Amino acid sequence: MAYHRFHQLDTRIVRIFNTYGPRMRPRDGRVVSNFIVQALQGEPLTVYGDGSQTAPSATWTTSLRVS
Image 1: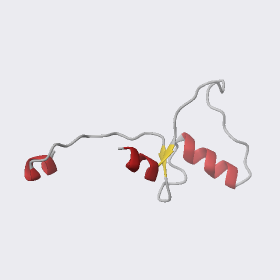
Image 2: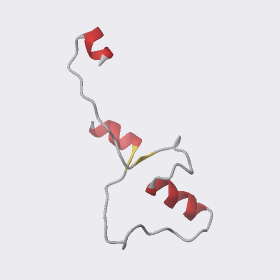
Image 3: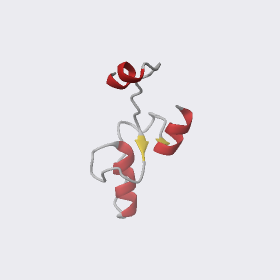
């Protein structure tokens, strides 16, 4: 909010979840990073829950364009 107060601009706070990109930490515990690390290392892929859940994922560049 400091940016908003300083520049007197209309601002929004966005919390982006399930976003991945080149600087993500390989072992951060998130579904996308776990999937990528397991796939690259030839490990069995973890299925969370019963496998029926869905969640949107996006690259950070897609998230920036949409915002």
